[in-house]
Image (cartoon, rainbow over all chains, first blue to last red; front, side, top):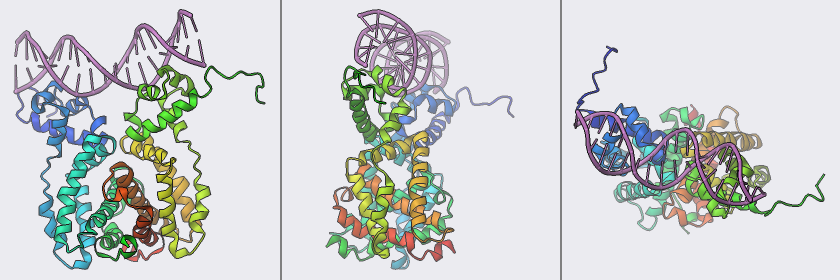
Length: 201
Length: 201
DNA sequence: GTCTATACAGCGATAGAC
DNA sequence: GTCTATCGCTGTATAGAC
């Protein structure tokens, strides 16, 4: 089977191959670090085809971010259940997404956002409009405290994802998800619904 | 030992000017994003001088990281005092360093480590050898639990620094340090000395 | 549709004139 | 010591032949 890879001429899935290679490249090296040439090489196609299909590197990145991952579908899994275990469920779902194939998009977005202002704005808007507002709306949180609570949750989740999937600091990078749920869940729970009176005065 | 008659080179502060410009460039754009040319332009010198003084971009980065910041001097401020307020003191000191001029080096190191494997290893080794071991040694922590506890602390602190100083997610980016100490301190305290029996089984 | 060829800019690094 | 000039390479993007 290895003799002739029947991919060369007129393969109809060239576009998809580029997307797969781009997703991996962006996840590994971020937006600036991933080059059109390397993506094309990874997909086994000519660099010019990337521009032919996607027009520019920006548009390719946006297409890469459009994974079949709709936060709204995950929200019920978080809110349904005992209110005092929302933190644990949020951490569990969060870890599940990042450990899944869809997590590559998250790694790519986070990695890119740290060193590229354009993607940083993308991540900010995504977090604020798609995540924070929904969670705050769903839960009965004092609106005046909601933004800070959401920021604190974001800080813990972003930190966990960064240490686990980007910096790969041990032993957290290899710790079983349920261990982290048990350890970090209460923290998130506290940020969401706990007493922050000392903090917010 | 000092060469009394050794006349200083043409401009004695050229080297320092390069270091200052490099520190800022690395902090703003990370290791890969900061170019020798832009650093030289920022310092108002010729790009060739950067290589003349530092030999390579790697060595320049290492020289940039050698800020007058010795974690050992900060450790007593954290450990001295009520044991149940170690988390708050750690968060307070941590925020103080990142908000100070020395924090630029932290931003540079974190930003570089996320997108560059070479600097990622640098940060890992720094965190593990300089921070985690000292804190774990100083506190009376079960050695078998110490690495995970340190990882969890790192995840929260890295996340707070990332959200605050790199992603600049509001309102956390503009929140007063003491508010964050009150909000995040208990989390760190729990990771350090709290009951993780559910997690570590 | 696909690929060759190339334009144009920027990178780190080096050699050598002054 | 400082700088000009340049090398070799890589980046995105485009034009045009098959």
